[in-house]
Image (cartoon, rainbow, N blue to C red; front, side, top):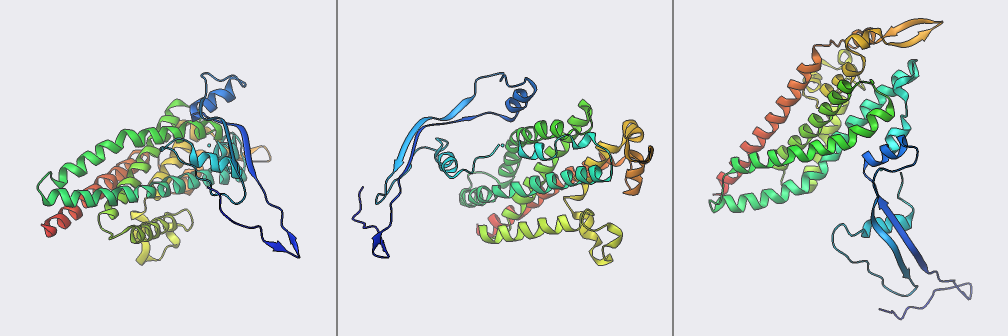
Length: 336
């Protein structure tokens, strides 16, 4: 639809108008596994890529209102991001820390630890996006339970079971490229344990968001509370400030931190066991100054914590889900 808009006048002259136009624009979508396969095969993909935009022509003229319409997943946002130049290569994290796990020295050690810290920050923070879903489901739940349609326990149990395979897929999509690109412990067992920890982290964060979505009144309050608590977990995890330096009245936050236990699991998986004992992390004048086992002793960690920390994380997952059930049951009961 054309609008009767005149170009503004500057200095007695018309300003020039601009026309946004693209021709034969295409954008293909590859999974992370396909991207890895592309790298290792030297440029020969294993399967044909999927195009979400193919030979798109569009134009936006001055003085017009242009609308981009289409169903969910049609590529509307992708089109705008391509036109704005915001599409970058989905393997950025893996290439930033490329092969750092194969290097030695104090800097390489700190870089690996920084990778673990960033991974946990990203994984724990990203699941906050599920808050609007939980809030919407809560409104439906309270309406239906007031009519006796179904029980709160049925909702909490089914919600938990539905998320298990979906979040496992998310964990594998994250772990598969970054683990091998970063060059962490080169063993299948190490990779499987790393993926398991990532899955537990996402489940733990999901349960945490589900719990507080049952408690907060709205999205704004929920975002504020969850973000504040997540920030506290990062602060008291032992990464930014050691446990010995935390004031005694704040030590309880160290043990409640969702960041602490998976971070320790990553360190033990990378530097523990027989391979970790033999691995030299820092050389000085041809001598091994710091081995894997020596580094873990400095951090006050033992190989046995590899599984006890996972048990604690499982406890967080179950505990937050049970607390979610109690809060929802109380809200529904008082409403009835």
